[in-house]
Each structure stands twice: as C-alpha cells, then as structure tokens.
Length: 259
Image (cartoon, rainbow, N blue to C red; front, side):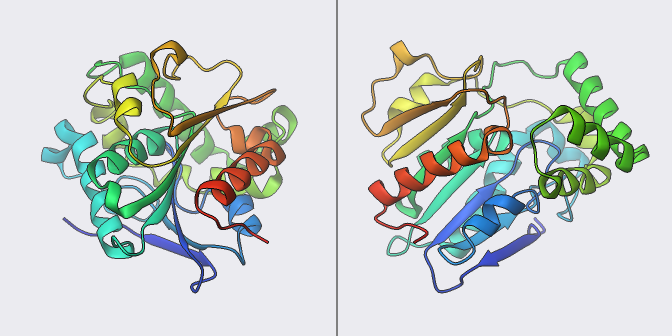
C-alpha cells in the first residue's frame, strides 16, 4: 500500500508523540496542541488514508476500511518507534479507536496512550443517516469555507487557528470512503480497555455516550478525566483543561513534560 502523508512538527531531538486525527480531519488539525508542545516533543501527525494528502482508498479496500486504517497506523509505528524508543500515541474519535487497537496490537511500541472521546464501534456496517450527515457536512464546508469558519467562530469556543485548519481539509476527504467505509469493525469495547498493558488516559466530555461503561472497566492502567463544558472535541472546546490533564498524565507516566 502507498504510505501515508506525514506531518512533522516540534523538536526532533525530543521524545516522539504520534497524533491520530478523527473523521474528516487530517494531520494538520492539531495546530494549538503542536504549538503547545513545540519544544517538548517530536510530533508526528499522519493524514489517515482517505484524508488530507494521503492516498485514497482502493475500491476493494472499502469493505475492510477499519483493518486498512489500522494497518496503516501500525506501519507508521514501525517506522517511527522501536521497543527501545516507544512513542506516546494520542488519538481523537476515529483516531482514538485506531490508537486503542494499535496499542493492543503493538504495546512494545507505545509508551502511553491518550484517547480523546474515542469512537465506539457498535457493529453497524453502514448507517445511512450518519453517511448523509457527513457527506452534507464536508460538502457545506467545501462550498463555503469562509461562511463555515465564521459560523464556527460564532457557535464554538474554538480558536480561529483551529477552525481554519479544520475547514481547510474538508475538501480533501475521500467521498467514496464516506459513502462506503464508515463503520468501525468489531464491536468489542470495554474488553479492549481492560486488555490494555500501557498507561492510558481517557479524556471525556460530560455527556459521553461512546465512553466505555465505568462499571465494566477493571484496569488500573486506565485513568479517566471528565472535562466540564466540553463536547466531542474536548481539546478544542476546553483547551486549557485538556492540556492540563494530558501534560500531567504524561509527566506522571512517561516522566517527560513540556517544561
């Protein structure tokens, strides 16, 4: 398979963190976090397949999209990590479930895992309503990016930097993937968290229907932080709270901080 497009930021001499974005985003959609970590981390941010400047899905890959996306991420980890230099893996939404599965598949390459409201698989193959919502969303931003940017500035607490980066990549989303690849694979969930063998921080909004059930989590390696006032994009809605929680977690479990 053709390799992904990778964006590299920060300090190449520092420990490595891999940022795995959510659906319809790209590796360029972490500007505020990248700026925050500019001196402290070597930041690797891929465009997932079908997103940004990465290759599109081949028609025969769409039926196995979750496995293709995971294989891409594991190939990237093989390039940038090794058992003697494992990386921190940070994922949001779709990137969260991919990061979770990658940490289970290759725990030797992952020092720690940060999951921002990861997408929960429910076994549904394709949800027509979800497909149409996403197609309409990316087409709206593609047709009128300036209008959507102004709307987001009015309706969200996100910074202009985040919003402009978010809008810029919507025209690049693989529409065939949105039509045929939007499912998450095996519905296993709480058992995945219980099987983790690396320190993990789960960052959740107050209303988090995709979160694993707390009464079914039995893994002392998994910490949970609930951020008041945040929605699905916790780091954009409440950036100070997100950064405080993640920096403290990484300082504790990795022994590395931005200072």
